[in-house]
Length: 95
Image 1 (cartoon, rainbow, N blue to C red):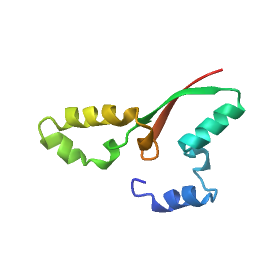
Image 2 (image 1 turned 60 degrees about the vertical axis):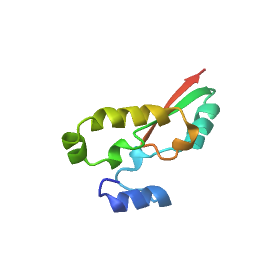
Image 3 (image 1 turned 60 degrees about the horizontal axis):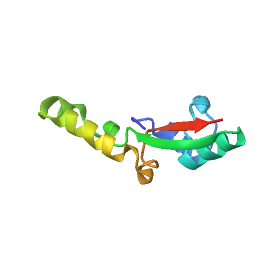
């Protein structure tokens, strides 16, 4: 969201807007789209689950915070229950 509340709402409601080409997909939508294109999803990884939620001041001031955040992101990347919370989903597929 990053303060763009109207754009976030429009993405939820499906209302087309100026940033319509920047659509976000759920993991299920990605699986469906790739399947329709003849791809088999091999794996999905959650990316940026917590990173965008942590204030940069904390990362700058707290010793070890960056390394701790990276470890946390790595720990949840392969867990499917975190795909819905991720800012990005890396998807591996074969054709």
